[in-house]
Image (cartoon, rainbow, N blue to C red; front, side, top):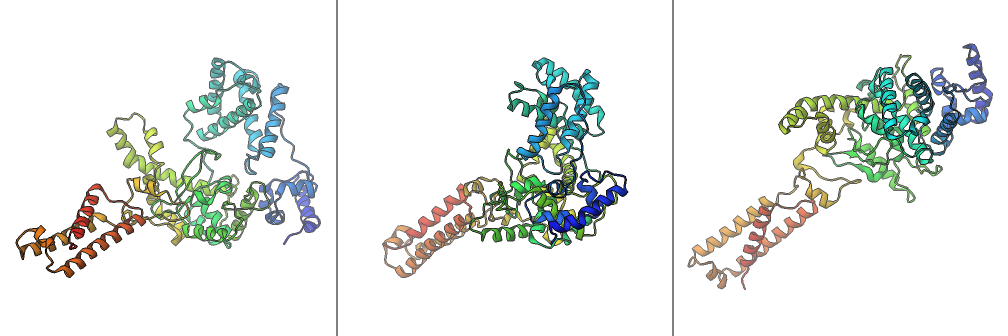
Length: 519
């Protein structure tokens, strides 16, 4: 266990010495990436079991200075003042920006201000937000057009424009502006489904190497949620047990609109047994708050980003994964990159095999609309799982979740749906076919009555009115009623109801069985 004294006596002098040897200022806080690249892991180990961040230790305990930021362009003192307040509140007070993206805000806004200077002759973004609706339209349209030309990918343009939307939302909350149209105009550029891709995506073999390097159950849960469900660290922090659906036919997670990137139901591709075991252990704590990574020391009740990042770094350090690229840093976001890359491949297959012919048949002019909505339901999560099964098996071996047979699907806690939802689901297949049972019992009891009628006078009423074979008929009748009642109870317990035809056969058989009992 690394102590603070060890950091001060050994870690800090070696870091400063290395910075000085590379011509860097030894008093300025190094980046996390630089520390990892030079194998200075001590501070990460120290922070792992404490509710403190690496930056807090470097600045407050080890005496490094904050890295100086580049000045914002332009001459508007008010806009610069508002931006600095925005950066501080978003990263500190609201905790909406995690450690991996906190530096993106000033970078994005600085670029936007430079582009605004080139486009309009000024860098005053607040001035644009205070224009009338018509003025905002033309000013933002031209700015976003310049933004699109500035970046190599539409995904980067979308991300930068979204930062401006967030800033304008913040201004509106503070009553600095009345309203804005940045989100409306951004969406008109149709960047929504073109995200900025990673410079490198891990292969299935490299994910397998990470998986084999996990030791603790917590590490396994984190790797599964990152790579087999495509979650961001912030998604893991807000994930609760009641939003985990482990139905073998459609294993998935669920998020509401309050999530950073909106509502969604990502498919779970592997590790359902690991999650079950983890949840069972959590349930043993009577004070458990339902979080997938609970913490008694944090206000949110969940583990911090630093905790997830440190666990991920531990796995990386033990694994054989070594990405020799200057433009790539292996972080938890690699999990989502891997997952989304698989999803993109599946969508290509989906568009080729389903969307395009469906669009033509439906007379729809927008393939994107069909693709957007159709891929979100359970049938298409199943399509996704089927398409990527070979990759997931290579990455997680026998932990990959196999495709369950629709005819034998069932619901599994936690996260099972309500019985009425299950009964109304057109994909739900009955575990017990009541129609078959109804037909068998109906046919059997009918044949018995016909047999008895044939040996008497051919009248069913005369058979029921007589005392001939009373014991035998009573046994048959009681047995028929018992079988039907048992079948009905088993079917309801399995959350399945018969079709109207099956119900009719059941009641018909039940009536014959009751009628077979002598008076």
